[in-house]
Structure formats: structure tokens, C-alpha cells
Image (cartoon, rainbow, N blue to C red; front, side, top):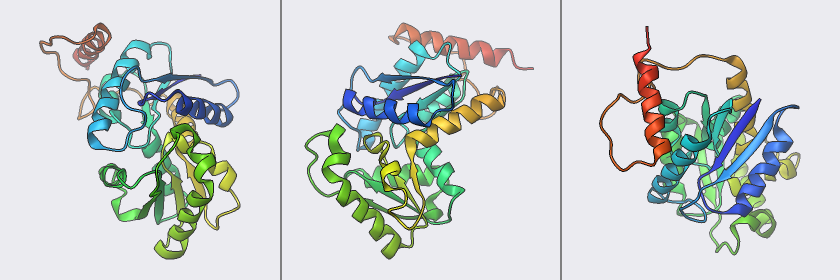
Length: 255
């Protein structure tokens, strides 16, 4: 099995964290490829930055998805996930969707630990869009400058653990989700140091992607996740134009 993970931001250090955790989590024989956005921002924490990251992710997915069994949007907030699910011929998941799916099986009240205050509103909107709003106990986030996005875990490990402890003690969290690719792998360190389960987005996404690919559930050719209909377009990168055309062909082939 081959999985393509796409980092929607430009930080190679974050891609390194994603790759390391994905390889630790993957089943034996699963091949992991991690790509980094060719344009965008160092890390995504606003709706507009997510819009940019979604376009970068779509471009990389269009160029490289052939030969892979599933695609992972490797950023919390899942920039572009639902659109890619329409267009790509393979299963697609993301860190938020997969982490929430894992947390759902472990407890009722879920708290998210994030790396910045600004990111909270966007995260809450994404979580609500997935139907987990009523299950969200809290979002707690760091409130301090980030010297290096790839070094957040080392620089702020104690503060992140303290936020998780407060989420359990004060918010009634039954499961902790560590939000964002910069925190990939931290759940392994916190296992046993918190009184509730801790969920990592990268490992969850890899395992869910493997499951979806193995299930071979088929592709949507009707409904809201059917491929986009054929229509004139202009100025698109060749790979995106080709992906749209291929989707239109799949749609036309429906029984």
C-alpha cells in the first residue's frame, strides 16, 4: 500500500515530523511519501491561510496522486479535504477528520490542544462542520510566540501538557486531541502522563487511510461528492485541468 501525505504549509521541518510519525504508525509494507507545499505560509492558523494551503494541496494532489492508494491532507483543519474528496479517484482523509474519528471511539467529550490562540475560531468551525461540535469540550491553545514551528514540541512540551491537564480537570475532557502537524508524535510522549487517552492526527490519518484503501468502498459518482461536472475553465495548471477532465469522465461513466 502507498500513501501520499501532503503538508499544506511550506515548512520542511514540519514535513520531517509528519514523515517520522507516519512511518512509525504505518502498517508493515505501507510506503509513505510526504510532499511539502511549494508556496504558502510557514504554518496555517487562519481561514485565508487555509485557503492558500488548500490550493497548494490541490495542485500537489493533482500532480502526484497517481499510483497511491490514499491521500492525506497533513494539516489540522484539513485544508481542501472535502474538495479533494470530490475530485480524486482514491480515498482522502485529513488530520482533523481522522483524529476526531479516533477520539470518537475513545470517549464522549473531546478537547483539542492547539499551538496558537488565533487558530481556535477556524478549528472550531472545522470541528463543527464534521458534526463534532456537541462533543467538543474545549479548545485550549498556547499563548506565546513560536520561535520555530518545527521545534514547538521541544520548546513548549510542558506548557502543552499543562493545557491538556487543564482540559481534563476544568473542561471535563475524556479524550485529548493534539492539533496540528507540528505536534506529530507528541502523543507518544504524553501516553501514560495524562489520565485520559491522547490522540495524534498524523498516526490517526495514516491508519484510517490504510483502512479506507483496504476496504475498497468504491467511488462516489452521484451525490455531493461526485466528481465536479464538466465545464469550461481557464488558466489552471495542467495537472488540475487534467484532474477535472478525468473526474468528468468518471461522472459520465456512471450507470
